[in-house]
Image (cartoon, rainbow, N blue to C red; front, side, top):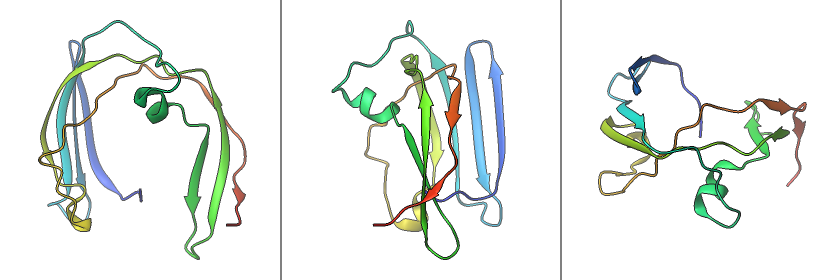
Length: 125
């Protein structure tokens, strides 16, 4: 997904996190939600959707010329928690005509992991 400049606010009240993002230059595109971790930490088992979604070991980027770059990543498995969450608004996909109003989102929370990232290299496809 492409990155865009945005005005972002992130606040923690007790155990609940509130986040809001509004794209600079187009205030009709944004995201507003709150979430609270509700489970013990778990590590997704190989072969599960949770594992596939979180265990990524490379990143991709492009330049203005359309060249694709790849960088190797190393980290320990993500310690995840299930969350109670509510999305108040999500118009991030409006510009590409994706309607997500009927899609049930998948939520996870993690305190994070330390990550090593190697230099990115131009890929050839």
